[in-house]
Length: 115
Image 1 (cartoon, helix red, strand yellow):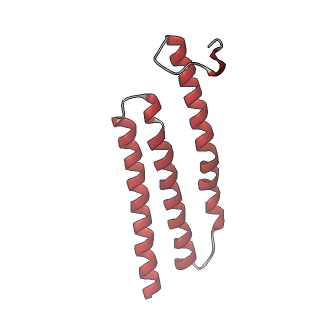
Image 2 (cartoon, one colour):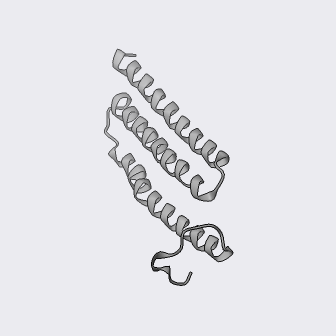
Image 3 (tube, rainbow, N blue to C red):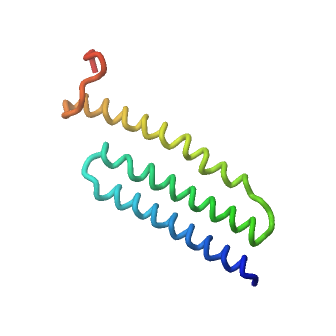
């Protein structure tokens, strides 16, 4: 095994461990934070970072150890980066609407109109 391959394996392992730590942080944030609105952010951001680290590890693996460039792997984190904020916005609006229906302590709708 060459020095470059050994260095690539270390980089791949570090990226995969970093991705796992980001996923663990997201899970801890999901469990520990008190309200739904506060709980939304850590999983969305940390899971996106975890996927980016994992995709970069896969690209380094294929590039250095197998000698081919696997850019199609970037499709997963790119699509996740596009859809995660949209999903978060839809979930937050639905939760806000539901909380207003129950009479919770949330900001009024824009313009002060009906719920």
